[in-house]
Image (cartoon, rainbow, N blue to C red; front, side, top):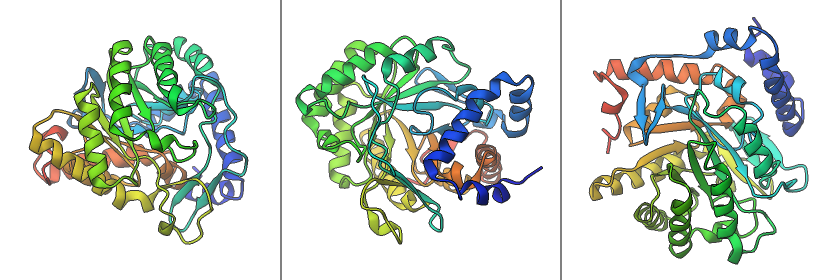
Length: 354
């Protein structure tokens, strides 16, 4: 069988967004081919009770989920499920469809195994995505939607966008991920303040009775991040997703002038943010779900995040560089690390390095 690392050289000759569109087409078409996805599942899924967790009323058969941004429009669910993910975070979705920023808006930093994107919340809009979810919900895996405001929505009306999304997805998702940390919508990160976060979560929790998580920027100071974490939790957030992409262009050799960077170079920032949040929550004895994302490329990094307090981890950019076996390799490695260190279950390892 053709190894992904051999195939990758041909994929990388394509424009990154064109390559992603081809992957989306293949994933959307794959369920129509009899017996294909069961075959894929057998090859790429890894199932072991040592990795199973029940968190916030959801069942995760392993800790590795798909981060937002890969399946923006809920068109690839069945194929992604067959790649071994424990949960899928869709979006970002905005109330109205929007085309996003001008192209080119997606770049590879191959030597650094990282991606830079200035997509700008391009998506089909909440109603179109919701109709697709209606056809398959409840799904075999937990489904989350990352929600954001439309580009043309004023800051004053931002909460209306988020509450509209909560109403639309209340019936066909398992959790919401609140995105006020993308660098690709003008002034969106300005909403990362305690006043807005408090008002937003109070409003969302009135509408959406399932778990709601806040996704943070890695570019916040630790002090600002911790104050937002406490504010969100105090006002109904069930957990924190750390982190989104970074605007620290010093991390790559030849950065573009716009867009956020994800991938391997983000690992130290994401790791430190997770550690500080987990430490603070441990001291205050607040039971909060922590999902770590950013630069997780292998089992060792995933295990490090779990030992630093992450209940779950998410991947995206590493899929582009490592291929479809990524999730299986991480989960298989996690089982080996847990058994090596004498843990009977993944829950015993969460936060042991704090």
